[in-house]
Image (tube, rainbow, N blue to C red; front, side, top):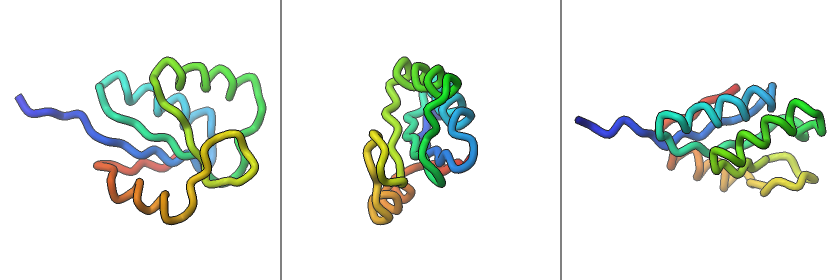
Length: 92
């Protein structure tokens, strides 16, 4: 039987709560998931807080390309490297 687990880079571009939900769900299949929030700062909402708890349970530490947040900041070079290293890149 072949190993079907993948290294997945998920780009949360429009709906950060949905991106967090999808990222956590992908770990159920054993995939290694890296989540990068993009486009705008992650809003401080109850829905995002609840989804962040899912990320903690799934051992996913989100990163961002938007300065001024508490998340680890990725510059363009680090984002490009992450995209090259991933088996699959998804954008939500």
